[in-house]
Length: 238
Image (cartoon, rainbow, N blue to C red; front, side):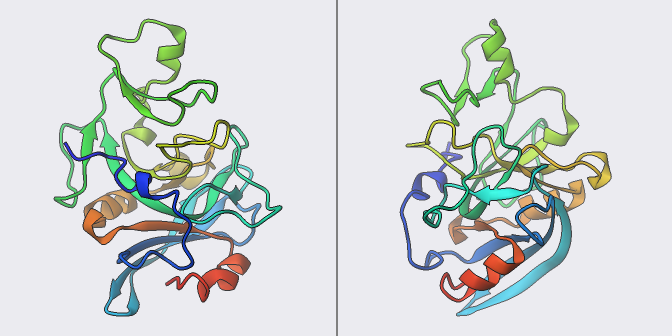
C-alpha cells in the first residue's frame, strides 16, 4: 500500500517558490490571524496559469485563529508558531497526504490512498511519545488509557472522513509543534470552530477528496488575507 504520508515526507525541504511539480492547491483565506472562519478555494494549474476550480466555499479554523505551522516553508523569524493545544490552525504551505474514514470505501481520486480506520488505528498526539504525530496500528484492541486516548475512531461523525494536512509531519516532527491536523467535516453546520483542523460541509469535503490527485503534488495554503497578498508573488501562489 502506498504510504499515506508520501507528501508529508517531502514537506521539510525549504523552497523559494511553490513546488514546481504542484498542479493543485487548496487555499484558505481568513480575514485575520484571529479569525476562525475562512474562505476556501480550489485551484488547478494548467500550463503556467492557476485556474479556479471552486470557491469561495465556507470553512472553519481553530477556535483562536491561526499561527505559522511547520510545512514546506520555514516561518518568518520571530513569528508566532503553532503549538500543541493552542487551538490554532497551522498557517503556511503544506503538502496534502492520504484520506481516512470509517467507511469500507469512498468516492475518491483513484490514486489517492485511503485507509478504513478501525479501533486499532492510532494517531499519536502525545508530544512526549517517540511516535508523536504518527499513525500507528495496534496488534490488539486498545488496552490502556493512553492507547484509547490516541484512537482515530471515536464514534465521532465529524471525523468519519478526513484528509491529512502535512503540518509538522514525519520523519522529523518537532515535539509540541502540533499534531493530527486534517481537513474534516465541520460541527454544528459550521457554527463551531476547531482545535486546529480545517473543517467544511460534508459535501465540500467529498468534493475535495474526489478531486485531489497525488500525482499533481497537491498543497494546502492557509494565510490571512494580508499575508496572502504579501507572499502571493514571492511564492507564486494562485
